[in-house]
Length: 180
Picture 1 (cartoon, rainbow, N blue to C red):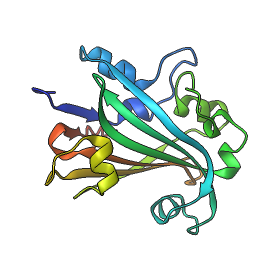
Picture 2: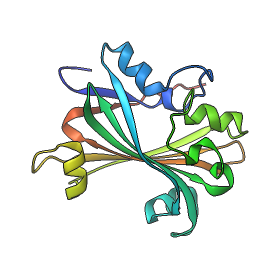
Picture 3: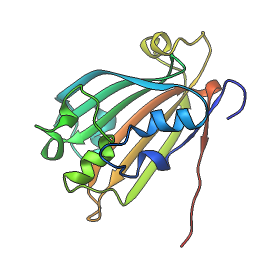
């Protein structure tokens, strides 16, 4: 992390935590001397938008459970995240509600018998929609990064899909790959 920017790494969000632990985002921000938070603005069953359906291997309009959040750093919006789950996994669980989940969603998924073993991330850049510009408090002409992440279980079934939108000028994505 340099200046007002933020370096985001994916690993803390892919590994189950102790059920009594806080969420990975808050811990990562705190470790950097900053304050992380999130607001869940919607949770529940919805028809899968095209992007979510593609990531989860479904047909657009099939039912999915979504958790829509605004991620904040030091009180400022830094990311819009929609996380989608197959209904067979998430319906009737805390994933379908607006309450924070102790240990985070990945920890709950593991407790439900769904542990991720493979993740695919695609990053693209584009101009934000008017709604994204307002929610992220962007100036005109500021692009965003869109990170689409799919988590697969040991049977290679998608168990979670995240679509994140973040200001390109405030974010640096860092990938670390361990071989063997």
